[in-house]
Length: 344
Image (cartoon, rainbow, N blue to C red):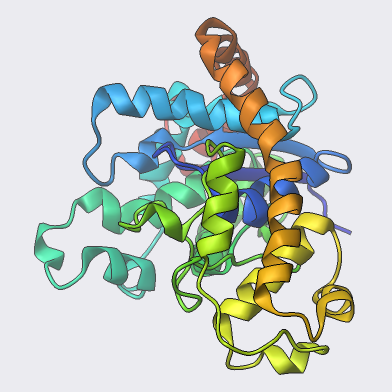
């Protein structure tokens, strides 16, 4: 039994254009988790500026992510919904953790290598240090669980390594300050669902991404019913009929992706979906997927638009969430200062 109260923390970058992959891979799970956990959902605008951002767009995107959270079913009264930059303890703890983390650990992060590309010398320091700030985001609330996609699992492992090293390095001081054997929990990943990783509608081997040049590669949460239908109908497929069993999806990335999307939107297993559509051609399957996607997503799009138009309401939700988050963060940061030996 963990000595730490169970708490979920998760963050979404404020870079706009939330899409079906974000919804199925993250936000649906956020809504479910609030039924059984104390949850904190953060718009991570500090992370967003690791690459250049337009300041006006950054504010708009921050509000859009918050509106999407609420439209999808996250209750900002029962949970804490806030944006990262309003809680300065995130950055404050990140500095302490920078002095715990090792350069070699960061140099092994594959996502930095992918994003920086060949011109690593010109990447921002923030892009390299991104995983330490992510660790601070989680640990400032002593969160025990983090819903993550496959691409963030390495970063969560780093957060666990940093937490463990802090606990080891300051073990005597942690005990002396009344926190027992460990101050930080080792956060556990929460990964579940039939479509945890949603792929591009134009290339089933690539992850669905807001940075893809083709808008037809993704279904945006801001798309209306006609746009959703058009994108599903134009989604890449192969010439064969759908198989009756999951094994038949092997080597067929586009078929695997569309079946996974149908399964996730309908709350069914891939095997169940194939039991219904096995042997069918893609045109009839896509028609059913259009009906399902429009039924599920169009109401969210409409609600998200209405919430987003009320800026004072969205700003009030984020401000209230930040005040509640900061009350927790300030207490934990004060404890870290005492453990490290800062005079206050």
